Amino acid sequence: MAVLPPRPTPTVEAIFAAYEIEADDGFRNHLGASLIGKNCERALWHDFHWTTRSHFPGRILRLFETGQLEEARIVRNLRRTGATVLDVDPDTGRQWRVEACGGHFGGSLDAVAIGLLEAPKTWHVLEFKTHSAKSFAELRRDGVRASKPRHFAQMQVYMHLTGLTRAMYVAVCKDTDQIHVERLPADRAEGERLLAKAERIIFAQHLPARISDDPAWWQCRLCEHREVCHEGGAAATTCRSCLHSTPVVGGWHCARWDRPLSPADQRRTCERHLFIPDLVPGVVLDAGDDWVEYGLKAGGTWINGARPC
Ligand code: SF4
Ligand code: SF4
Image (cartoon, rainbow, N blue to C red; front, side):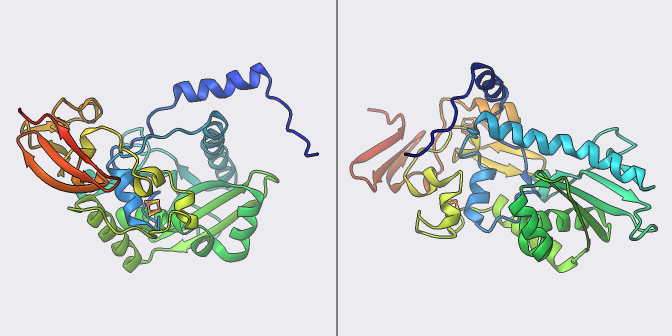
């Protein structure tokens, strides 16, 4: 008979529950450079349009925190090698940020550094990641470009937007504390390709193609948008899933009320919310002021909004 794992104690349950209580919805104002290396453009569109709220268990949220806590230690480690490491912009006192596409695409660098032993005269973008033993072994065997394409893409975007020509990837194995360091040159063509990809997704008029129409495809099985993408699940109701909203330079705009939408507005929505038709599993049959009627794939009709009698 299989041995059951030990029951969690109330203390462990309470620790993880606290993470879940404090967790936010996972919606980010911009499309992140850390995501742009995803293979599925539809998944990126869903990320940007806030269609799926995050529901990570407390243990996973704590694991994310472990990765963040490690960053300060790596900065200390690198400084002890003699490098000058700037984890914040001295002019602002905040993390180094890059952005593009009218402010809708960007990210925050872990740090920049000069005086690194491998190339002391060159400023580098620094990217820090923690890995499981399996992931760390793959990284060592295949290098970051092949084994962690999303991290590779993230660094290319940072180099492209800062103008720095080198990045250093510092990876720590969570099981053994081994450290893998890899330097990467900027690839201008790759940087431009990634920026064009971000622009295509941010200003897309329609849902981009799926990476697979088979929900059993391995990337779909792991995707947080699987329910809304493949199973007819409802998208989260925010301004970003409303057909009246548009990303514009510096923010979002609502055509229904002709006004800008702050991030708080986007979460609050209003009573005139109407889903972007691509998010409804059906076809538009009719529409009027503040309502749209759909013929659903599952059968029957559905009126989004309030059709006057
Ligand atoms: S479920 Fe699959 S096709 Fe749909 S967004 Fe996710 S990865 Fe893309
Ligand atoms: S109509 Fe309402 S829900 Fe839609 S974008 Fe405007 S404020 Fe947001």
